[in-house]
Length: 115
Length: 114
Image (cartoon, rainbow over all chains, first blue to last red; front, side, top):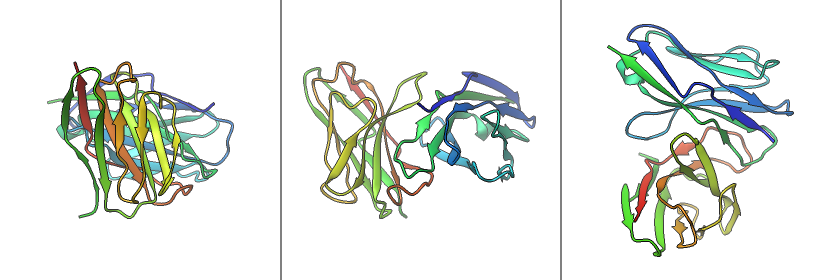
């Protein structure tokens, strides 16, 4: 069965610094998609970034980028120039590309941004 | 603006009572999902529906029931059989069943049962 592991329950970063959140997953599929979601204190889940497994290029969205290592089954999120508004829970998620319904979420990493 | 609404934001019930959580979307999405979120456990899938009048159990369906009579609505009933119903509940949708997309989430409902 597919699993997603976020081994860092909590991380802290100084404002304007860079932080990397880890995510590993286990799958035997070759076609799949990975996501990072942000859940701020309002608890509204917001998509941060997505990565298709067939794409070798790492996805980037402004200050957010991923380091996708397919062979290692690793999908880390890098946040550059951290801002106070980045403080939130971050969830890594996986879904196979075989047309299934099931998104698998990690347990989340709480990011604190220190002023 | 299109989106997903969940009401109410906070819900309180006495033990032994059934309670229904509302989820409405005006995104014209086919698929809808219900998740339960507990501290340290991420999001766990309760039920999902790919089309109207059809739904399937997720990983933790025991003690819950759903209906999908309209495309835009997917209410979740937490029954008295659910042993530990106090949690945060999230509703989500995706445009097309079977087509990979990011999920769109509602603001959630915090249910407290005493």
